[in-house]
Length: 121
Image 1 (cartoon, helix red, strand yellow):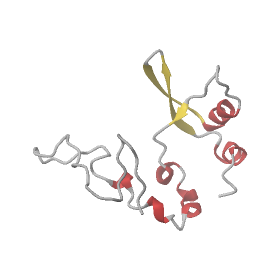
Image 2: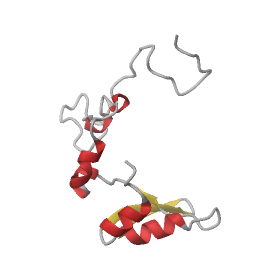
Image 3: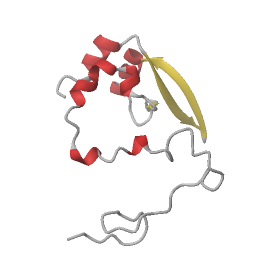
């Protein structure tokens, strides 16, 4: 992973377009920019002049030759939530479940988002 530096991406993939977005007065503005321009923007951003956000960049589609750098996958990547039918376009066609998310799991390994946090021993 040491090779994944801003300089590496600027030199190897600088001409590729990447999806970005920014919030302007409570409005989300989506765009695509050259990766070299985006890297310049993020490396020179300040609190007053914030960089746009990179989003929806799919490494297998945009940079398939870099997939070997991601192997072996760390154990904490599993299960891969990106493969969930509930979180990606194409929700189930079943009218009983269409548009609904699965019920929360009741497990001691899941953290809750609200209330006091307790450690698991």
